[in-house]
Length: 218
Image 1 (cartoon, rainbow, N blue to C red):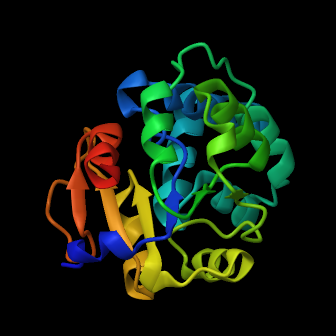
Image 2 (spheres, rainbow, N blue to C red):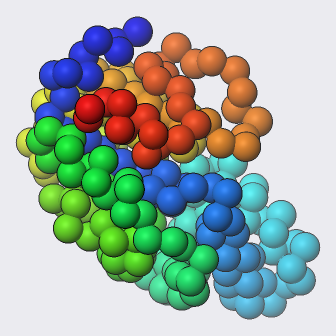
Image 3 (tube, rainbow, N blue to C red):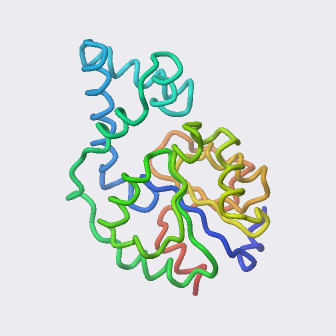
């Protein structure tokens, strides 16, 4: 475990969805439904079949979008524009989280499998737009999603990150494995998932991001 290294961290990398807002908000459910609707409309299939295809792509490729691109030739921009056309009213402004992020030393970044436009809208709704120095989205990763190590390497290059001084925070545990292998401290927000077992590449397993950051920042 590399928990003692937190005092040396000067780069904080946050996932976006179900990380900077709680999974209990069910906000991401809107995106999931829009994915199903897009697939049903694009292929002229019923919702049950579309949902099955959506999940099959996700489990095989890491994201539904990646599977649609590789197997079906779907244009990523069209897909993302559709699935991110959602109502933000479910999200509450995250004032307390913003204060905790402010107290962290160094730069703060967002690394998302979504689009920059989606990240900007969500951060704006949460009141966190000014807290982050940069957004690394799926297009910046050449459409290669987490947990493929390619995106992590490009993230480090883009922002000149020293992984030994970086911390990555995620709600999907497997997305932390490449970060750990690169030398980063890793934080898993353990929500209501089936990934209950401890993983050797997780340094901190937490339930509440804001409360944890408050203990880190002091």
